[in-house]
Length: 299
Image (cartoon, rainbow, N blue to C red):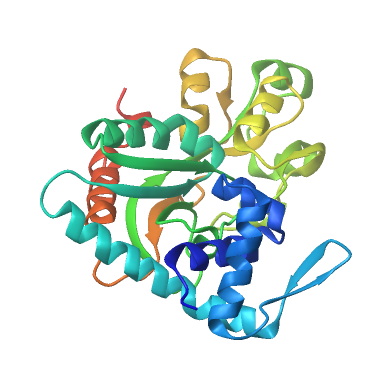
């Protein structure tokens, strides 16, 4: 028996989803189709890839090892086939992009929409998630990353920088007094970001004591902004989230002399050789759309 590309794709989906039903939902097929493809693939490779007990499925050591080798190979195979199909004509196939929630909704979404309009035969999937997504495991062609890049095998292109500002609502300042000195920060409450410790966010040179964590913590920048607008604390937020509120006077920048390092905004992608044309054109489009003058600083 021979395996098929569909067998490999289904096998990797089960590995990622952790269940037959989860893989079926992602592939938009029935559970019986997924089960048959897995059985066929096991028969083709000549070994059990999953253990099954009481309705649960778990990968064997052989499956884990095989998945590590198959993921990059499948990416290369799909890229090669799509490059031949596209040639120098319109782009075809599928392009999947991961982006943080707030930045993605406000700025990446419109950029991707323009790219999709320019390439009507290309299927585009845009996934919003503030968590650090594993591109290879999630099957993504590219991802948008905010902040300093950790050591990684991913290829990177810097798109722009996102300045940040300490902000508060006029109502909060009216009730708690003005902030005129960095030493006063510790007397105020900061809305906290769930995915990072407060000391990782409030970094300045020279160092200053961060504010006291407020009773409110969330994993989304726009939700943090909403809490600041409600007068529940101060926060250090990217300008791409608060620029309109500052212009309209709904928020006030405090201690503007404190300039934290800007957030590098990068597009990253797995090291595929050669780089698929659809991916190269997307990266160029993102760079041209953001560039040295990002949209939130143009007005």
